[in-house]
Length: 156
Picture (cartoon, helix red, strand yellow):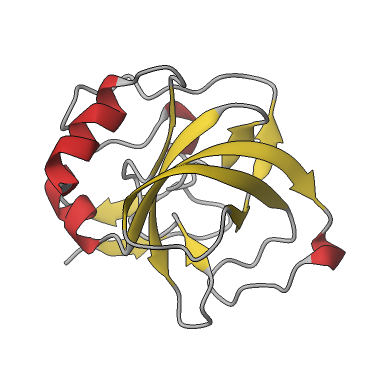
């Protein structure tokens, strides 16, 4: 088990980050998806899991594990005009650069592809924000990515 502790004025603090294989096992669904648009907070119902009005809509292009029940996914987040690929070695569990200070990387480049390790929250929403400082929402290369291939082999 790992513990998460944050306050608005402090950096993320985590005890016991899980192994990458544990992340795959604990995920309810794993998808490859493209970030398509930032949507208005008035068009979605707030999740009780993450209290943030900004949402990003994704088109799911491949499901590696589980079933989302839709071809689209909407999660809390913001957009960025920069790529943020994770430079951690294959099999290592480490959040991408943008997520170091706030426990989770919450920015997404529109048009970019992401590997999302998701759980279903108590209110039925899907979220990648469930294992702090972990590889739960990495940007990946759209035409063949070593990280996606590594995950694909392990969830078969």
